[in-house]
Length: 355
Image (cartoon, rainbow, N blue to C red; front, side):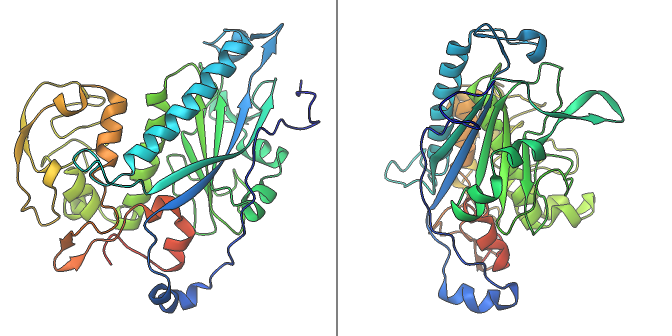
C-alpha cells in the first residue's frame, strides 16, 4: 500500500540544487589549483521508509523482530533521523571536543522522503536462504537518476529492518569511480550514474548509535581506499597514514599502537565493540600527529562515558579537517572530510590524505 497523497511516494520536503558540471579527469590537476578544497560540504539526503503493515501495525512476521504500531515506528525513525544528522554534523567539527568554535564540515539536508507500507523488495541469494535487499529496485522505483543528477542527492537513507528476514548492506556506493563501501562492492546492485551516491540501510529495531555506526564504517572504507590499503599487502598496513598511524592498527584490526582507534576499537580497546573498557593506555589521540610526536596521555573510556554513540562522535572529531596544521614527512594533511562531503570532487582531482 502506498500513501494516497502521491501515487508513488510521499515527499515531505525537497531542495532544488544546481547540478555541477562533471570535470574531466585529465584536467584534474589544473582544476585543483583553481578550486581549493572547500571547508564545508552540503549533503542532500533522500529518505526512504519501508513499513510493512497489517491493520496499522508493523507486521512482525515480515520484519522478524519489530511489531510496534505504524505511528510509533514513524515517530521513532523521524526522531532518529534528526539524531543521526546531529551526530554526523557534530562529529565533523574538527577537534570540537576541545574547540567549541569549530565549525561542522558536513551539513545534512533532507530534500525528499518516500514511504511504502509494504515489505522491502528482495532478490534471491544462491548461497543463502535469507534473501538480499534489492537496492536497485528500491532506488529505481523512486527515480534515483532525477534525484542524484538533477537534485544533487549524495546519500539515500533507507529505514527498514533485518530480523533475520533479509540481508542488508550497512552502506553501498554507486560511482563511476567504483564502489567503495561496507558491502560486497558489487558494481551491478545499484544504477551507476554520472554522480556518486551512497545508500545507507538502517534497522528501525535498533538505535541511533547503530545507524551512525554505518557511517563510521563508510568513512573507514573510503579513507582506507584513498590511503591505498585496498591494494597494499597486510604486512604494510601498519605503515599506512590512516590505518597504521591514525587508527594504530594492523592486519588484525586490533589496536597495536594506540592512536585514535576505529569504530569497534577505541585506543584502549581489547576486543570488538569494547567501548566501555576502563583500562588505561598511553595515547596521543587528543594531540595526534602523523609523525608520532604528539603529546601522549593516559586514556580510558571516560572521555566518551563508555557510550558507543559518544565514542563515534568523539572519534570523528579527530579526523583532520580544514586548516588542521598537521604535516606528514613535511607535507600538509588535507581536509579529510572532502572524501565524504564530495567524493567526485576528490576523485576528479586525484586528492590524497596529504596535499
